[in-house]
View (cartoon, one colour):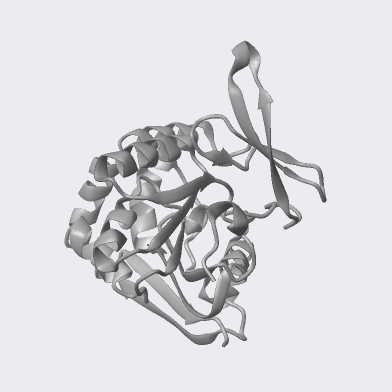
Length: 261
């Protein structure tokens, strides 16, 4: 059964039901707001997308990393394209991950960490009538993704939220994936569990990110960091067909598995 965007949403904190309310802000501006009547948390739509973080966001190791990540968010596409030159080019690198997704017409697809939205552009060409959804934690990514979707005339529902506490109901999606930056998560295990929770039975989940080989290059700019260990051991043992391999000429890895039927 097809579900609307609001029907798919839930409280990211307690997973309770959300109801919509409207109020009048300063100067008479209308503000749409979702309220969880289980934990009484509210989430407002002030900037064209639902914000489930209420002022929270990324936690950085240092001021240096904060500066680098902030600049990177502003020049995301050209810098990413440059970095992927070492991997054979951005187009080839994206194809190496995205081709592993199993999507068909009308599928509900979620990306946890959609950045500027370039993967939505790829998906829009892959199958017809896809229902696209995205999550990101950075406001800069939200703003630029919103602008790109308008320019590309692609329909997608995006929310600002933490991938470790997704604001979606259990079993909502036919395909779930994450491309880049899961290495930065404070609780990778929880993020993987959340991807599983919102997936339908039999969903193929794909997770890709940089290896330690690439991480050493980033550390020149961001400073020392923990050694990168692909989180394949954090995938619950009851998942099916768990596999991991190196990609991007050794600069990346991809983890794939299926949720049980």
